[in-house]
Structure formats: structure tokens, C-alpha cells
Image (tube, rainbow, N blue to C red; front, side, top):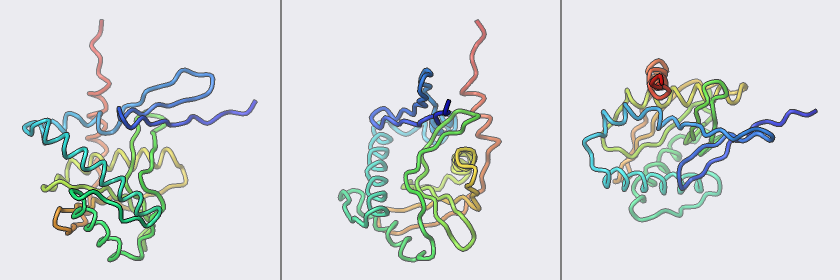
Length: 203
């Protein structure tokens, strides 16, 4: 009997990842963002939910525009995302030897059972680079290192042939500029968050 590979499903409206396998009950997987909530609270806890929701909505629309640009060459972007999008296009034009191999690539870690979506994987002269796109005004490199470590470990466990040489953040700003940050991955802190996320009081 042929074994059927599990399918990773994603419901965008609720941002829910589900692992589906024929003949078995579906499993809802936590996202990297959900697991990192204690760190997110430390960084963004004093910012109003309205401001955060607006930023998240703008980020979603920007990521969608970037994906369409990478796959089809479209320059179709909302006005409030245009500056950020311009920064991304400028980055691509100035890194012509970086060849995208995946954008908005969903994955799950088969052992730890968490999921995520990476913004961009590119081949470069130094190997495959994992790039996350950020629109925040401040650089939160330590927190980004936790997120990208979770992505790297999850991607390499999901695709055994994939070896990521470096993790980076492309920080774009509303005036069309960008900064490319080299990020040190920090998986141990992610595992600490993972332990907290899975903590259950004994009954």
C-alpha cells in the first residue's frame, strides 16, 4: 500500500496551518509567530492593537504584491505599500546574481510540528539565502534571529535537500530605501518559546 505524504493546508482568513493526511485526523499546527508570542509581547506590547492590525494588513498586501512581482513581473501595488515595494524592487535590481527559487513558501517541521511561510529563498554566489521582508521602522535583530532560526530549521527538516547558507532580513522603508541585515540565527531561544507554548498545567 502506497504511503500518502501529508499535505500542509493554509487558511489565510484565520492564518491557520493544518496538516492533512488521508485516513487520519487533521492536526492544527501552531505558527512560528504564535510560538514567539512572548517575544512579540516584549517588543510590541505597548503598541495599540489598531496600529498593529493596520501594519499587519499592509504587510500582507505588500507580501502579496512582492510574490506577484517575483512570479509574473507584475508591478501591481496599493498606494500605501508603493514605497516599500519600490525598496524591494531596488534590492532585486542591485542583486541581479541572486536568483529567487521560492517565494511565500509554506513549510512545517515534521518532528516539532510547527509551521510557517518564508518570504524568499534565493540562490546566491555564497549559497542559498533565506530572506525575510520587514517594514518596521526599528531593527529588531535579536528577535528576527529567533524567527529566522525557526524558519531555517523547519525548512531544512521539511526539505532534506535544502541547505541554507545564511539568514537575512530585508528591511524596506516607505521612502523606497532598503537595508539588508545579516542575521544570526538563534534556535535555542525559539525552543524556549516552544517549551512555554506547549506548557500545560497538570490536572
